[in-house]
Length: 235
Image (cartoon, rainbow, N blue to C red; front, side, top):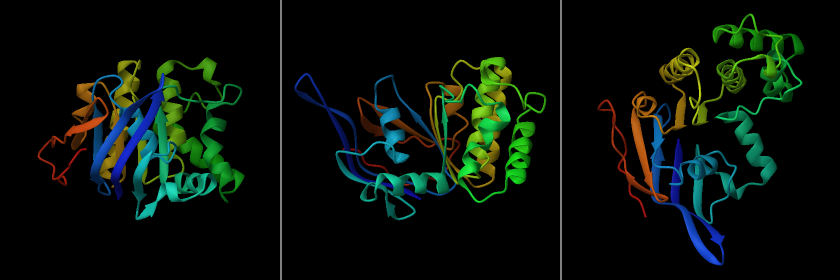
């Protein structure tokens, strides 16, 4: 479970305070599939970064399974992310001189998993995403859609319970887009928690609950597909 308590993120711009995000109270239960929607600059990525332990709020607390992320050191937060979370970015963040297989093995290299099992698990994940013939291709040798699927495989290979995705289908071809979305559907069916930032209404419609942000403030909590959700309040 993820909880936000009296969260606020402020920046200073030209000597003036700017609030990028604020929310009095919000809870995301285990296994929920959340779409975060809103216009550009509304605070979606700021929220996602705080949920992932990558951006310290100005005030308030972010709790993951009862653990207050920002009351821990950077190294401790990194360990929590490595154990519980996976990230999918629009920019992919693949290492250009490594093959698809090697890129996917990176999260496993920090674990106690043997080298043979690392390769086996990475191969299985890439094959599941339709890239069995691209295992030894470098990112520059892959299409944009294939690169995103490699990035998704890297996210999933460590079996994270929480998946945070920032515009994961932006600029993808229709085939790769559907592969990504079907994979998210499968993750949801497996009981994982998904939190997806998107501008695309058709992507948001796959989720079971939608959080809407306008000018950094959570103003709506529409339920999708009649899924139950906790009451939300926004500052």
